[in-house]
Each structure stands twice: as structure tokens, then as C-alpha cells.
Image (cartoon, rainbow, N blue to C red; front, side, top):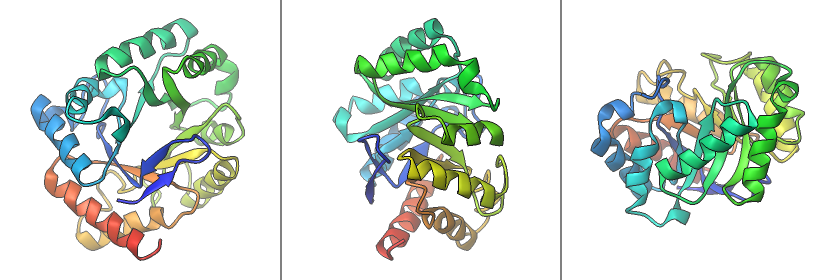
Length: 257
């Protein structure tokens, strides 16, 4: 699995990330529904295939599964993202302390403000931003950023220096995205030019672009062919899905995309 520099964050990530939040919210997801041991084992299997970038969130309930998987691995061999919906300094700081215990680590690589929907979010949530900045200064996290569910918020993220990492909804068909692929790509190009680390979600369009191997490959190849996207996260629930996605990503990487 190809590993790339993640913008100017100083982090290196595998081109493919395993997502733990398919249809996830309120403490559950398709991945956590697999059961505690099954998801732990799936994370370890993905790691064996070179998928060393793991995407989680407080809202998915997947921190304990990651903790168990990390017991079997060198901590530095995995890059972990998690996310918070807290918006005040106190609640964000409390979240980070809790996340570290739940994940079983003295740091989290990336923490995102989850599901931003307002164009003026930096004005609304300066305390949350400051809290993550302090956590980074203390070595509790290594990078901070955002995931957006609104194009205005997404555009604002491109112009906000504080944002180091962006989780972006992108696929060639415009399924479950904030705007058209062309508009999202133009904005991601601005982000990449500014040195932000960008990874894509909804690459398979909530499964609608993975009805057969050819369409799945086309969807992955489209996103991997965007120079402004460093990596992508795909929610996987079986070893077969991991192997299929890894094979496609490796093939495309080997062919020079």
C-alpha cells in the first residue's frame, strides 16, 4: 500500500483508510454492528494489508474497538482520525481526554470538528478551535481540521489557516456531496495549494457506485486521479471488501495514478 505525505501536517498516511462509520451516528455504525471482536479483527486484517490509516469518530462508537486492535500493534504504525461534535472549549478538552482513554493512546493523530454546516463556523466556534490548538501544543493531538456537510462551510475551510486536515465528500457522480464534483474539486485544489491534508469520503457514493467490480474501480480511480486528494476512506465490513479495495488501490498506484 502506497504511503503519502499528508499535506503539510507532517503525517504520512496510506492511500486507503478504513472507515468505521458507515451509516454511523448516535454511538453506532455498520462497522460497530459487526461486534466487538469482529471489528477489532477487521482493523488488524486491514493493517496487515497496508491500510494503516483508520477513520473513527465519537459518534460511531468505534474507539473501544480501535483500542483493542492497538494492543496488537506498534502505536506509531497507525494514523488515527477521530471527530467531535462539541463546540465549546471545555467540552472539546473533555472530549480529547476521554478519547485518549477510549482509544488507549497518549495522543490522537487527527481530530476533526465533525459535521460543520454553517458558512461562518470559525466565528461561531473560536473556542473549539482554540481548544484543539492547545491540545496540539500539549502533544495530545498531532493535527486538527474539519469535516463539512455544507458547501459554504467547505469553502470557508479552504480559506481558514487553522484547518490542517479536511475530510471531503467526493465522487464522480455527485452522490451525497455538498456541491457538484467540479465545484468541490476546485475548492479542494485551493486547500491542497494551501498545504492542507485532504482525504475523501463517499468515494463509492454510499455503495451506489460499487454495484460491480468495474464501477467500483472507476469510482476509486476517479478520486485517486485527483492530485488534490491524498487519501480516501471507505467503510468496509468484511475481509473480502478490504481485499477488493486494497487490490484496486494498489493496482491504480502501480500504474502511476
